Image (cartoon, rainbow, N blue to C red; front, side, top):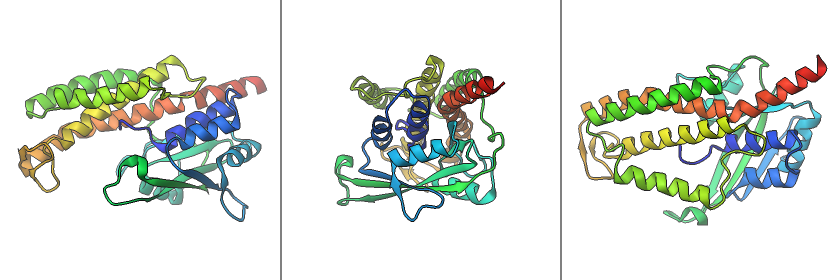
Length: 278
């Protein structure tokens, strides 16, 4: 979770565009980031179109805010149905819901490049498909205030649990990963788009740090099926099960917080629109 989900970039910069804070070209560039190309299949179109046109079409269809869903099996986080859309989103483990249009977008990713290639040498194309969604409250999304409180508790609980399990969730490996994250930020990576409240930025950054802790803890010796992991530590099946049990609620909290952060501005845009109509 050190990297942004593509749905997060689409929602964040799409919301900034809907609010008139960035140009269509800047939004499209920020959403694509390091990917070679993003295309969108919209209802009624003969084929996929580029991001700039797609975002304009969504706005003309009535989109007033873009929300993120990050579901995993057993946790339909951010989804509102119907079952077909939920199944597609669950397969991708992410989606974007365009509030006001009853449409959602699910990405499929195609990568091409040499085996074991450097990430910069991989050609990545993303195709977003629009599907009908139910206009209903999304599942299990907390407020920013709730997410911030939960993250503080989760970070403390994770540290205590991983210490008991003798997992190197902190220390040189964790610090190196977090330092790389901070370096990317300092190099100009913007965590959220213009218009997002400072609290959303703070919550997202903390969620990603908690996610880094979880990823590092899983990677430290947690080779699938037991045995020796990438850092050389022998881990039994029982130890892996204990580790997963300790990390599962922490990872869930971090995902919930990510969704709350990405959705914060969409909720604000919707409130402004409703207030203007009241």
